[in-house]
Length: 414
Image (cartoon, rainbow, N blue to C red; front, top):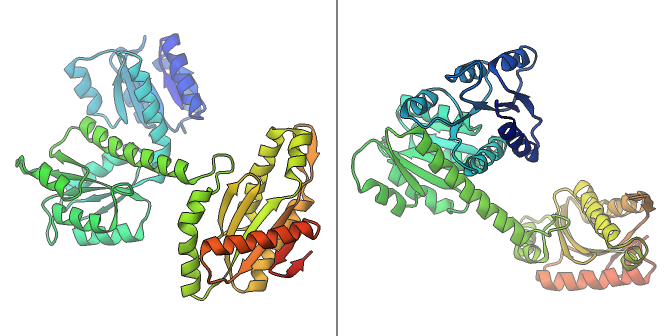
């Protein structure tokens, strides 16, 4: 990231903000320095630009940096209408008045989302090519992936085929299906915590915003709209979806291993089982437990124990792809895994067990060896809770038989 700022104190603040978001920062204090830097390097992901520099008092640095295709945020101490209009006439990400500390909080939000937006798609639905192109240009400045279409029916098809779409911007006046009808159809299949909708219209009717929102939209904009207002409404809805996602993740994810937690496993596991049974897919429910885990904690400390749990979860993700993985508590984990046949499933679990036992785990100056015991239930039609109990009994049998092994019902694989 390129930081252009002639105030040393402000440039240090911006640099700290950027580095906290894992940007590599290059700093310049004048247009002359910027030109020298861009002669040799112009692959910056983003830039923050001070409007007034010692050798460029009237924003000349903005057009120079933009000419190199670098997305830019303008920082300015000027608040007059002429300066604002000049900045907004250029394809900048945004501009931020240097009024108080909130300016830097806002900058941090922009830089955070500039990176994250790349994995988020927005669908623009408008039968006017000029209107679509204008919105697409605004969205691309903020690094969104953009899909476009000119009818509601095509929009519904695009939503079905592209799950990365998190927000729909739809015009009201369209053939076949208008924006309000489209919003209503969207809400039949997508809840507000998964997909946001912003309605737009050039019609001067005060009832439209209420109609859009009552039919499931999250926001409304009247055309022609100011880019600032568009970005504020857009990002407010994207941030709301992100916050909901983070809350749901915290509720369903084990904080240490980032696997599903017990609550999530019980919530989702039965659905997976029902799908496997209805499609006649072989599957196994496995319970696994780290052998002598208390001894590891006692000998190396609880930080080492936490490290072992993280490494185990990493091994599970690597070796047990396509499985539903969960930490049920302590050193006990659950795995719900499909396969082509029973023997193949058991072999995958056993390969995982062997790989873990053969790999010393490095912690500080120590090399820690650990193993797991596994209890398995295969293709059971019993409820999830009963299968877990049966798998737990098999796990106990594996422990009794000497640990570091798999037990299936009354059959043991060493």
